[in-house]
Length: 252
Ligand SMILES: Nc1nc2c(c(=O)[nH]1)N[C@H]1C(S)=C(S)[C@@H](COP(=O)(O)O)O[C@H]1N2
Ligand SMILES: [Mo]
Figure 1 (cartoon, helix red, strand yellow):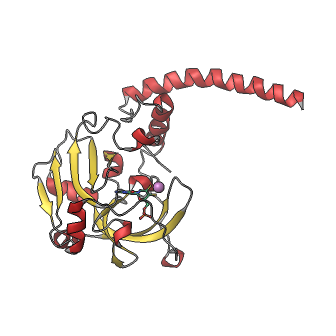
Figure 2 (cartoon, rainbow, N blue to C red):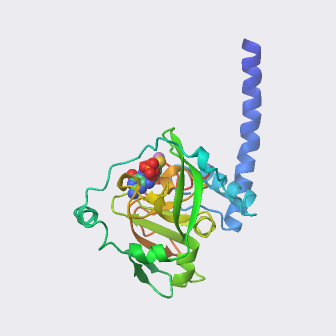
């Protein structure tokens, strides 16, 4: 009992030493290649930088999340969070979102707003993917919507753009780097399992990011901002997550 325990200690100590120099090297590389996530200064520090940088280097070929057959769609679709209580949201919901507009602004040549009907007329994509919540539950559903890359191109995204920020009607704002924002599976979804997006799942429009945990898929969207820096938004960590103990990058 003692012996393996002490061996384990030695191995762990060795790994920690190797890990420390690896971390320093990794952090230098990450900084050289622009692989520092916006919350690297927070409690996640260097470990968070390495997770992000490793995924970005490993996945630079453009990996895609698995898509499933219709037969895999889950019968039960849990919900995270309450429907926003903001008066503005309640009013739009009562009017079945006919007055709702998505605002797209920031580093785009043509800042604009889109009604739900206008979004529905743009090219759409449907995909059946797995939504995994950090709380441990998950489900498979079909999502239909406009590829975010299409909308960004339509707006004339500036070459200075580095992040896309998503503001909902509640406090759960978030952002993506361009690798995820322009990824072909990143959708602005207005449909779920062949119907309009149900209210608790984020009506009228939500983000679907297939390669990250569920919390990155911001529901109840109101505004999309294209920016070159996240440091002046909220507490500067790129989303509400670092403020509440989760990391900005949630790749799976
Ligand atoms: N605006 C907003 N978006 C949100 C949330 C939220 O509370 N508010 N919860 C997130 C979390 S933690 C998860 S796991 C997914 C779950 O999506 P669902 O509620 O449609 O199942 O939505 C994410 N998007
Ligand atoms: Mo979640």
